[in-house]
Length: 79
Length: 152
Image 1: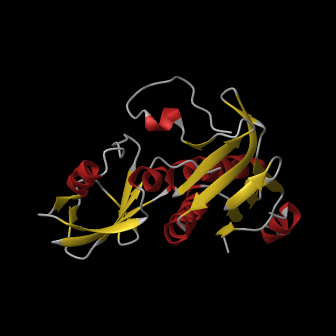
Image 2: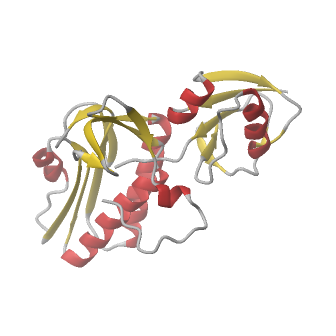
């Protein structure tokens, strides 16, 4: 299935792109992160990274659906 | 608006006015400033990247939680985005309440939650010419204890 993936801040620099369409076999947000990490070796999983799906904060174990937009956020640092 | 993101300098006096209320006897303000150093590096300026759609949604949620948890009348928070120079205000939280205790608690709650929940990232530009994305090491090291963990 096809999903849209967006990268922010450090993740955008590590992948060299702000967004891309990913074709994969399906699974959770964590599995999608692993999948794209194989394409982008600089992208490293970080304990405090966050994920959002369709502009809602989400959990890593949430199943990703066809045509979802998945946002990968590196550890946040506001303030 | 109770939570907002701004690409212009924050006018602290104007933000205070947003929470002004004759029923309130206390106003607590937190301002986060751009400082000239971090972890041994001389900082020249700072850049905030904000994912607005979610930051605004989550920020509004945090303000709502503070108003529900603490006995306060008004709360507002504004966070900057873009390139900021030293001493500029990066974030401001203003809380007004009948009494100071709740205002202090709510203000602390809002800034602490904002730092860990909002999709906002900062890149420090150092005097040396190097620039780096900053993240809170203690936050990133989930599951590790580093003792007292204070954000300023």
